Image: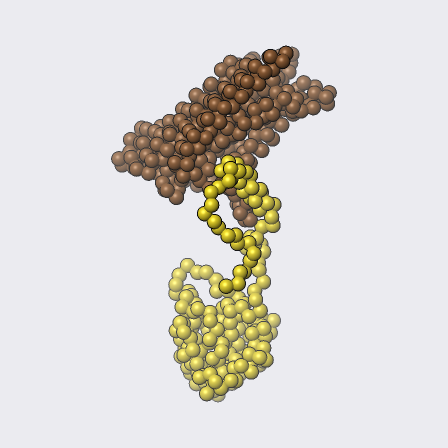
Length: 191
Length: 341
């Protein structure tokens, strides 16, 4: 196998030389190594003060998108729940009434949509499965809580706000390549 | 007047000892972190400077547990003894020269014993009783093993340490610590005349202070916590604190004996007043001590712990013969010097 670094040394079971047996020279060598590290730049990132930038395709807390007119995109088809390997998604569908056309894009919508954030493994399969571009994983984090019950996020936490300035940007995840990929009929949910 | 000055001095030295020991715990963690490319404590106060206080408060708040089958009296006596003896040694160390206040001359040394070195040795030897009593009284096998290790280690390394000192006394001709410091004015530090003796003394000081790589009495990988396995709350705190006081005091002793104590080279050529010289000397003394403490920590975070048989081999088969050789060679050079003169 090819070596990754050239730092490895051949080990031999040979008798130690006099200098090695003195032990003293070796100690000095060791101490020089530690003092070198003493002045080296520290690798720690002081978390609350400094934060690392997330990768553009970071998979964090989910969002249920609205379309440009502010209507919920989700049509409660259940493909995300089927795709979910952790079975974290539960939904109850309802039929859109005549006066609700400004609220929901399709004739069917999710009356209840819950994701159990303790079950979720943030794999992003729900996003891949969604035919309506409704669910996305964002660069936001699921905050810690004291009770298990509070980790079941309902529509109040998942659907993105109506106001334009509070919309959640998912353009980094929804690239043209991704959209092309999702049209691929090889995958079961697109057939 | 003299008594008042000595009392004040004693109080100040006690305070300094405690503060230095306290911040040694902070420094130890910082040094350890820096050598491992980490930041170390930096949450409590600026640079984590309030960390020792937080640790102290934590120690006091912890639940106090005395094992049911333990010897209660000795269990409490152990850490108290370790702490007391650790503090006692600082009494004979000359912290500085003479101060002139209102026509009176005061020495910055609490007690100028003419057998100062022997006093230091006595106190260090009693220090091991704190560990032994605590380990035995805990009624726990690991504690007892730690205590036995501490005792045997102390005996083995005290011999070589004593022999290193004998070589030193051959040239100084005095057991008083203030005399020894006086003789080292300028650049006549004893380390130049006794490099081998210094090395032996240093190694033995590491062993006596139970510092790595000689921290076998409390090695957590083998003995859980060694002699303080059963200890909790501030009694554990006392043991840990005593280790840092020991480190400070043994650094002070090493500096006094080998690195010129409060003597500062070229200070007399500056033409300062005597009080100024004394204060500067004390400052320089502390700088040297902090350097030694850093060396203690540097070694701790570099070297792995010895195995117990290696420890004994090194003490009896290496250090002791070298120390005896050192005594002979020193005597030889003294005779040679006399012969030439």
